[in-house]
Amino acid sequence: MAVELFYLITEIVIAVLAVFGNGLVIWVIYQNKRLQTITNYFILSLAVADFLVGSLAIPFAILTSYGLPANFEACLFMLSFLLGLCASSTFSLIGVSVDRYIAIVHPLRYHSYMTTKSAVAMIAASWFIAMIIGTLPMMGWNLGRPEEPQCFFMDVIAMEYMFFNFIVAIIVPLVVMLILYSIIFNTARKQIRSIAALEVHMPNKNDRGRGTKKELKAAKSLAVIIIFFMVCWFPIYIIDTLFLFCPESCQVPLQLLYFSIFISHGNSALNPILYGFGRDFRAAYKRFFLGLCPCCKTLSCCQDDPRKPSEGQTNSSHEMSVMRVR
Image (cartoon, rainbow, N blue to C red; front, top):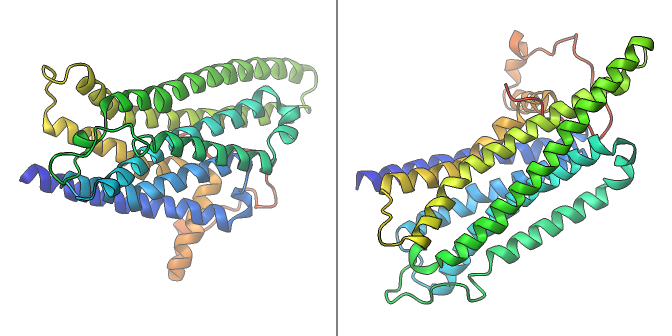
């Protein structure tokens, strides 16, 4: 009973943090033109998925932990929705990776390749494919109606499907992103070396060098987000794979199962913290909280640093606002 109560309280805390944090990300991007870049559209897509995890998927997971709802069709819908959100998060990260790949490997063609229309099309396609993958249990790939009218994940979702989901929604995207980022970092290093050599003879021609370093820093930040996502989601999928290939001999402690669920859901709550290390996001967060507490404007910690560039002194519109996580 104590373990179940701890699970319930932890899930509620994670859900509240995910809703607040990702709701804040969605709000500041909507309110700030400076944050409405192509890269941040993919971040916005990820934040929407994480917001839905906190507002709907985690409550659904709590209900199913108690065997609810009793209606089989409603149970399948809830579980399929949760699985679809996981896939949509992964595919949003692929979109970010493609955006960074073009920005660094093909910088002169970035604005022709990565337009608002192309970004929206990529995001829409990623959500469509993710929801198709997530709704496969509703289309028949499930264990069938349980003997008792109850909704437990292991009694409804086929582990063969979970292994397929692991490969399609986690492993394949991870391989794609690793290939893209290996090309990104190799290209960026070569560009920085070439530009450094040119700056010896033309010291005032270093704008592209600074731009390349900033793009590389943004790519490193996003790589951290991707690694963090995979670390959070791998344990639960590995446990599902164990259940598939050795259902009898492989025993997983309940505490370990709950922990893997916690960190998979906790990914949605912690992502906004990773975004918040960027200067533009920090400034947007500060303005939001100052709006809630106008009297805080007099505090020295809330004063804008006059040495920082104003909003008018921005870089190119496709510069990533997420800075390196410290």
